[in-house]
Image (cartoon, rainbow, N blue to C red; front, side):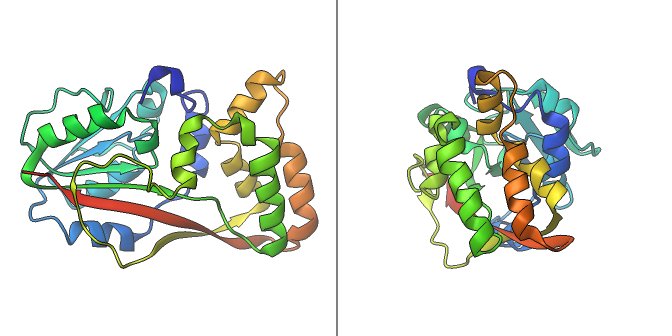
Length: 250
């Protein structure tokens, strides 16, 4: 992840508060492919959400991110070792990692350089799992409002890397022996309208919009429009997960 693309430091606190968490089924599937659970590396850790889950199953977890603010706001556990590092070059020992995870961050990386670094630090039987989650779904009417906002209001303010999420991560360079996945994974949350607003405010496109429009926040008008269709205290929201997983090539 390049420093010029660090769109998350300034909203690190709300990022931690409003970003959705991943389902246990996702980690159960990833762990089922691991032969050892000694050392994991969560790359692009952000607020440490994934690292804190890995720490429950692995003896040691390294967690890296280029955002010092994100690291400062990250969840702390005794067996998590945080550092501010680029994904493409770390001080991790070669052949030392059983599992590498990259949650909602791979699209920011220099693919070739990161793949080389990941292969360097992975053990011969190590596993790498990268994933992203797509645009949230609520119901037909609200989906149409969100789709319009996503495409027509903040569409041109997304960084070009966002296209990899829109492509379900199929366009990511992944230099590993890929494991076939038949399972489907998704995030399901029950949110109030205020929580939805908080989450959308973490979008990098919203931050880019505000930077280029004198601080005007387009989310305020979006939420007013959604409110007309909300009609309940909370609603169930779903995010599709796109997972790729593989072994280190020999």
